[in-house]
Image (cartoon, rainbow, N blue to C red):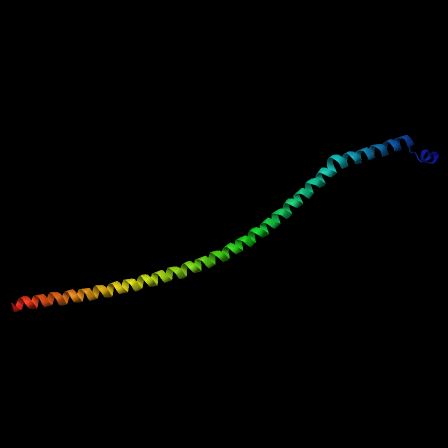
Length: 118
């Protein structure tokens, strides 16, 4: 102890400073360090959750796009089929109308000929 006193160090003051520093460390640890670490860990967990959710959304988006393309292709094929059927029906109607017109025309001509003969 005399050695520290010879060096100009007050032992009582040194002990008080050590106790004060220890108390400061305990207070900072309890009220500052732990809450900050807790907050950082929570933020990291939120980021990890956000990343996994983003990845899940991306995979869902890709699956939806694939399904949408498949459905569009099906719809196009179906619409083309309907258009072809409609064109075929229209063609048949035109041909039937043409035949009926020809038959009516022949019937009218036959009536006119029969009237002319009378």
